[in-house]
Image: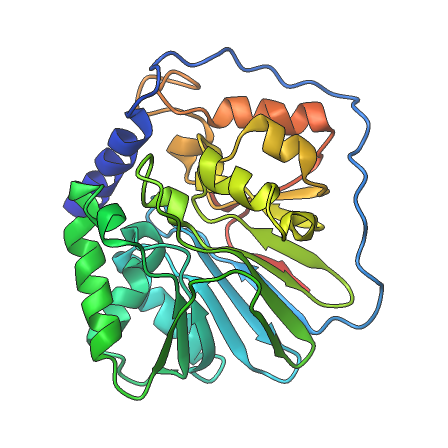
Length: 313
């Protein structure tokens, strides 16, 4: 297990470092900014509860579970393979019937748990899996991730009694008991930061709240959606920070999207940019993103490494 964690951390740092300077800018919190104004969802009865699930090994990961007021379960990503046991138990405690499972992109810290579960679903019943298959050139564009990606795609193709849908155009909207989900962006042909830039971008809402999920979207992926036909749909109450909050979407992207709170699927060593030498001494840009949010006046933050399991009703 320790070897797996160490390997995933090295892979994350390697991808992050490509084409970027190693020097990190000084970090300073700024207070007393005006709160960013956002259009709040129409007030009404909540149609779903959402949980932001932390990595239990303080590793990178992206995992969200939704339960509608009638008990239907929807999952987004799921985290690393090592998280599959906890996820089985978490879902099993609510009946073990998953209505829909959405995968943002085939990096192990996003689809790894589902990939593990697909090898042996046991008592977990998954009705539908949604993903956006990347073009072949993109699959080959990240050699260190290609084998895991192809294994995941093979397991999707071999899945029995599970409907698998390949989302190749944005705009699809799904509804379960008053909970709505819309696809704002799908896999891209970008060969720069290829896997992250193929993140599916999604918005979830009911009459009480809204959340936009950016996955690991890079600058190109985020800007494509921002300037595309669904750009206005990015506005929401809660925004999941792209690529665990560092070197994802641009500062301009965050300035243009309206939101009032941040969701950070972020381990301690990424949150503090500390890979062993102290606060903000590493190559990551999380502290820069935190500074951007402070400048925007965002005061509500839910961070997996500090909040643990967080629930939104």
